[in-house]
Image (cartoon, rainbow, N blue to C red; front, side, top):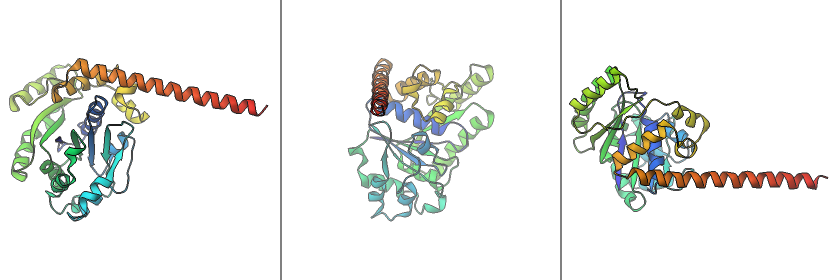
Length: 285
């Protein structure tokens, strides 16, 4: 099992969309995935169509180490995908809830999550405070989605320095993922700068600008089941290949199979609804 924190101290860089999309891709291709919403805005919980539940990650932080593992496991909620579960967040989640920045790590170890999951993905709010430090200390590695803007790029060096100082035993930045990319000179210049600053850690795959991400969130749909042929879905297939060493052909094959199953299931549901309405209409005559 691998635990990955998705982190950037800047806001609006696409962390939650990345976490949700890559979690869905991994789950649809046969991996058992647990997503952890470590953000008081609980956008990941909404993106995965679960919402706020009780208990949630706040209850885990507030509990002592004796009861916290039981609460953590009780917080796990199924999503609409069989292999994807989530621990939700809530609006009251604040740094003040974190007494020990190693608490989450100790809880996860006590839960024995490796018996149940292949990957744990922790989505984080912007910032580098106790909540984010807890996720960093709990993880094996850190993925950093970033937009290609001057302040976003400049801040990554400072962010890595801060993480090394505050979390000497925590996960390290292993991948930086350019997000909202357009093939323009300015964006390519920023990517060249990133490759110079973080040699070998910037993904060759860039997430292209695509309105599909807003569409699936607004409509409560799953990118790979409802918009598989979009530019955005293709980017995440490439990312799954690059980040997790999955063959692209196998990923596409698995996603096509799942999409086919989904279409057939929806067709069966529509058929039975139509049949029931017809039968009800006959009974009224």
